[in-house]
Image (cartoon, rainbow, N blue to C red; front, side, top):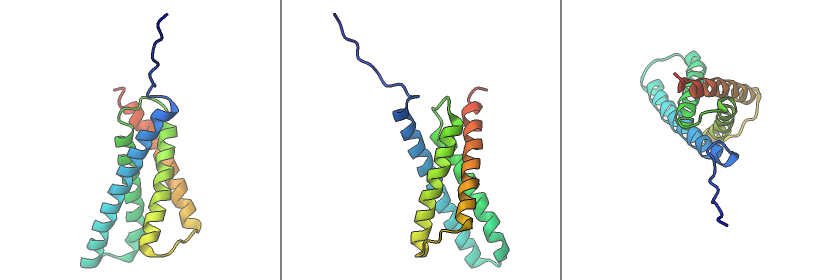
Length: 135
């Protein structure tokens, strides 16, 4: 009687962790670089302070989209769940990193708004990225 070795499928829970870590890492790296470039731009130009919040939101949205895109390259289903998780963990890690850089942890309404924005953006991007491969 021969025993056959079982192989792990890429769609199981263990296979979901690696794409999420990759997506969060890519999103965080892009966000850090973009924020640094924007800070230099603010320093050397006369850009209005009223543009800071909208530009930060655009940077977060683009970072999450690219993180989901690179993280879910090989994933064929559950885009909404994976996108939600990438958006969630990105927000938590970005909050920790930028709070450490700022020297203060401020849990307020803006953090909750960022979390909701990131969850929605991650879910939408996850749906798009997973279904984009079908065409």
